[in-house]
Amino acid sequence: MSDVDHAKTCQWPRGGKKDSERLKFIDWLSLPSWSRDPRTQEELAQDLGVAPATLSDWKRQTGFWDEVRERVDERVKEHHADVLGSVLRSAKDGEVAAQKLYLEYVHGWAPKQKHEVDMQSSIRLQSPESRKARIAELLAKREQ
Image (cartoon, rainbow, N blue to C red):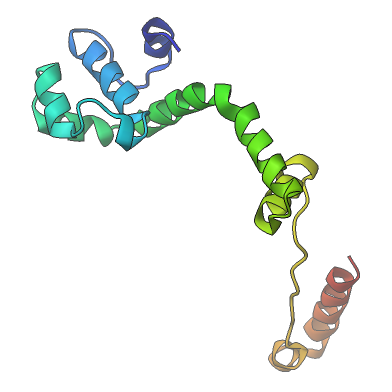
């Protein structure tokens, strides 16, 4: 996303020199911490010519982290096929966690979960009418 596109979607007040600094900060935060240059937020503030507290203030603004997330998504989408390919390769090599992840992602599979209901404690505290309704409700859920 270009700075121009990004500026169009910003949720904070725009105008002035600090817009470009905010965008640079968002871009910096969207990188994995091990690849950021400068390494620290304090060093970045110095490079941008703003106080470190300004960066902290920006992080608390409504919509700020949504903008960071959008930038992260934009950065990583080109790696999507490689990552899915690695998962598939690992799944084919017999890695159970990769097989499960592949099935969840590609086929929408989810492991079945067992739910137990203590019918006695649920029923004891109810009137006869509400008890019958509750039993019917629980039986209907059990049959699904």
